[in-house]
Image (cartoon, rainbow, N blue to C red):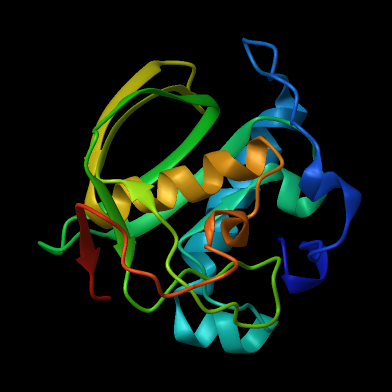
Amino acid sequence: MLTMNDIIRDGHPTLRNVAKEVPLPPSIEDIQILESLLEYVINSQNPEVAEKYGLRPGIGLAAPQINVAKRMIAVHLHDEKGVLHSYALFNPKIKSHSVEKTYILAGEGCLSVDEAIPGYVPRYSRITVQGTSIDGSEVKLRLKGMLAIVFQHEIDHLNGIMFYDHINQNDPFKPIEDAVPIDR
């Protein structure tokens, strides 16, 4: 089981590298890694398990964050209607996105970044993601709002991009034009 000790911190070189595609069909080892990413995110949201194992709550995790430079992500969260979205994907790609932007009013956080970094992180409001699930089936997801933000955050990790790279360094809270804020 993954713990916070398995998650590398900001400054580690793996976080800035572009991760490699996972050869498909995936190896047993790659399947186990992807399953462990999803297991961490699920366990981190369970208060008893999180406290017992010292897990910081998260809603997404990418393989580079556990020092595995491969294109794998796990996302586990409820949307604004309370519907659970739980995905573990190999080689996720953003196939299309909206012109309209969005951002979280409170800013973004990251399991690999220990301190709060204030500022708005502009993201696309709607995206279409394609990837391969643990069972090998092709997945195409049309996402909006918070779900779209989380997927963009995790896919950024696969490209060596940290959330704070998107923050306006001169004016972190400068309003983002034509963007819809999300209050979460």
